[in-house]
Image 1: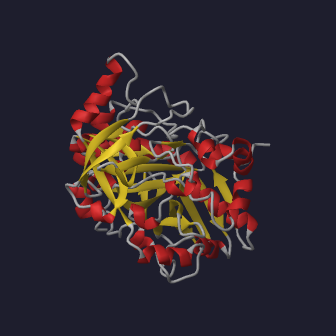
Image 2: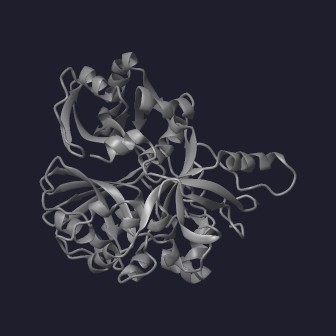
Image 3: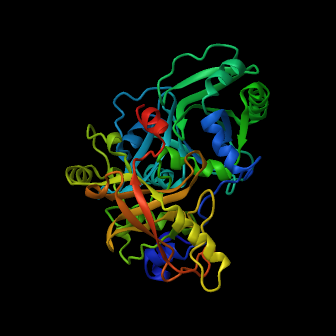
Length: 450
């Protein structure tokens, strides 16, 4: 039987020590890293059309039954008052103290039938409450291709870019009906029924197509054939993992499962192998210093106090306070180049900076400083070819969030942790400039406006 998170904490002594030295990898993308090269693949969703395979790296939690929607409403901060079949939403959950557990995409598939798709953090939380609560509902869990035995239940393909609409009209042989953002439609591709979610990734227009796994190869082949005239580009895991930097989605904030009412039993239930790993220059012994609220990472407009849910009272207090603001930090090119150059010089180098995605733990938490004082935390970090910029997404004190504000990001760990992704290195302070999130003007004007 696998060790629980609670047992691991008891054995090691603290949740911070468990996570900082955990072997969990920064990301799990069991698909081809590059079909051509990640730079050209990043360019494709801005200049033509990108095809990304989402079938393997995410977890699906299929929920069904009379109380399935009640469960989601009890756990989620979102409003479900107007949630209908063929709608989707970014489902968000917090703990009893109003700190973020995580987020995932929730699909309303049919009467009393839902699919919650994303990283395991919030999916585990929902599954736990279903198993331990009094709900007339059932679930089927389909893990990613690292943990799953056999094929996925569904294929899931992403089409993104300025040519996505034209490609869809060619491959379906019909005009694409007007579909609101985060609403679903049904199409026919090569004689097969395909469901589609209308949304954007990296701020670009696009479609998320899904259906039974056995039909996926026919759909993919049809897309490739039709896509030739639209400069369709296959995108691998390297480029795909960096797309969130353009849309300003923070993929994996540390889940607030270590404090708060009801979390002790949850830590007994959760295997430590699913707890993830913590990286970065923030080195506090207080695990709550790593928490964020939905307001800290731009989820405030998804919070709805029109129903009772776990953490509602605490979240109302967070809403009334002056929250941190999500921003993009554009790292100084000379400091980034200097960090890379340190690998070619004698002595202990700076922490290795990988491209295009540089985070080295599932939860990346780096200190953001002004004049040596902490003003926030930096999350996901990497390179955007379309902007010729190395950036991170950050949550910083609102009074320091104006574009153009100069800050420093402390990069690297002190002391170095024992994670496999960490080599002997020294910390460095990287200059950075506060800019809007999303950083891409196209994403700000189109994706966020939706």
